[in-house]
Each structure stands twice: as structure tokens, then as C-alpha cells.
Amino acid sequence: MKKDDCIFCKIANGEISSKALYEDEDFRVILDLGPATKGHALILPKEHAANLYELPDELAAKTLVLAKKMATIMTEKLQCDGFNLVQNNGEAAGQTVQHFHMHLIPRYENDGQKINWIPGEPSQEELEEIKKQITE
Ligand code: 5GP
Ligand code: ZN
Image (cartoon, rainbow, N blue to C red; front, side, top):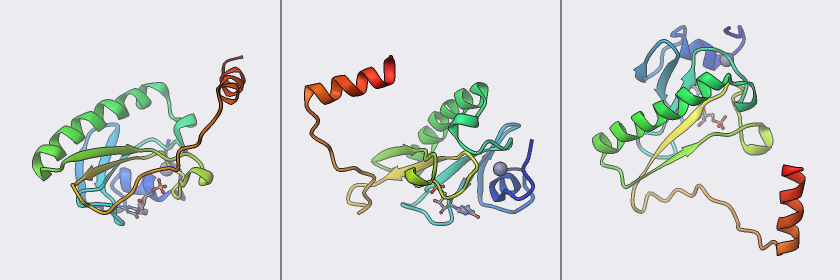
């Protein structure tokens, strides 16, 4: 199902034009308008899901297969040196468009970008507590 007021629904389904790199019955892959690096692209499912939690399993599985295919093609064509897959869920995690998407970010030596975090220093006890919280 499409969502009427969703810009990525409109782009994914071709109602708003985009620089599309790939399309099939489930997805459109487009160039990001605010790229982190040359070639930064987004995988958009045509069906609306706000985030990973809402995405049907079958589309979740197909997303990673497509990401691998696009990363392989883009690495060859762009001659990039590395590749990040990024997928944000929720505003706290940096999601700004509430339609599931996966970022395909080619990386180049000295491209100046940082997709990073500050590493914590948890004790073994803290790690054990977190493990329990998640698994019990
Ligand atoms: P998020 O922060 O939600 O993970 O990523 C949203 C991404 O969508 C951003 O990288 C932003 O540059 C991109 N974006 C937002 N609106 C548009 C648009 O209308 N067209 C395209 N091609 N990219 C967009
Ligand atoms: Zn949508």
C-alpha cells in the first residue's frame, strides 16, 4: 500500500521524478539529493513501511540482496574504495523521512566523511546486564 502524503512513496512509484539507478517490481534505487559522497543512493521499497519494524520479512530479505547487488555494481563503476550500508529507524537514530530506506554510500580514501560513533567502555557486568535485558 502507498501512503498519500509520503514523498518516498511518490518517488518509489514514479509519481515524482528522481535519478533512478535501478527499478524492479518491489523497489526503486535513486540518487540521494544530499549525498554524503559521490554516488550516495537510497533503496526505496514501493510499498509503504515507515521503518524496519514495519517492513514485511520478504521485503527485508530482498533489501539486503539488492544492497549487495547495487554495492557490487557501484563499486565497479565508481571505483570506490569501500562501502557503507546505513539504515536509520526513528528520529533518535537520525531518520528524517518516515518511509523505510537503506543508504548505499560509496566510500573513497580521504573522502572526509565520518559515519561513526564514540566507543563506550562498559564493564563485563554492564555487558552481562544488557545481554540479560535483551535475551531474557
Ligand atoms: P534519513 O536521514 O531519513 O535516513 O535519510 C533521508 C535521506 O533522504 C537523506 O539523505 C536526504 O538527503 C534524502 N532525501 C530527502 N528528501 C529527498 C528527495 O526528495 N529526493 C531524494 N533523492 N533524496 C531525498
Ligand atoms: Zn511511503
